[in-house]
Length: 280
Image 1 (cartoon, helix red, strand yellow):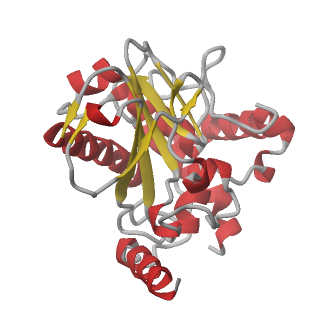
Image 2 (cartoon, rainbow, N blue to C red):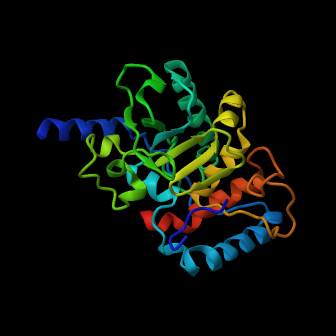
């Protein structure tokens, strides 16, 4: 699916600040501010960018301020998630940890494409799951407090992570009513739904089938999830057209099972066009 667009007490505070600083990765060594795609990709990349400028946000692509880029840069280099467990199944602590690890691995496949490229400032972009939303607390078979738990807050007929802690609902980057403050906010949701076919993605996060995710939890490339993460960063769909001179690629659904060279350069092109927003 297309990325979602518009129209489409002292100790506690200190702890929150220290937690955020601990999550903030070291910056990468500054890379040259250059743009050097292969010659055969220059034309299709230009076609894609022009198409996005014309079709996103009623022709105001740059006016939208909640792309994945905005989230990572607001955090100074990390992403927080909350899992929407849209299922009747139970989850063990081991399954929870495996879900977290799989999500982090897939997210890293995109951000690795930026390392050392065109002044991208981070050597890595850590992913941390800070919450789970569920219909019934008994479905979650752990007692530790490693994640916040939201129970039976139903939106879109599915468990919803706390609105006061969500970036989608608080795009100014401040979370005054989130019990854990900024350190426990979530930027995106991983929405895992019983029997859901295909996927959906946008600035709010990604939705895929619970069965698909668990069946592919150790796969090198979870191609549906990777595609939907691409939308969160801003990459488009290609249902009705294909840029000239390129064949299969991940963001053209069904034509590739992993991030291709063209996907990587489309991704980097977003950074090229948005980096001045963040002072690069």
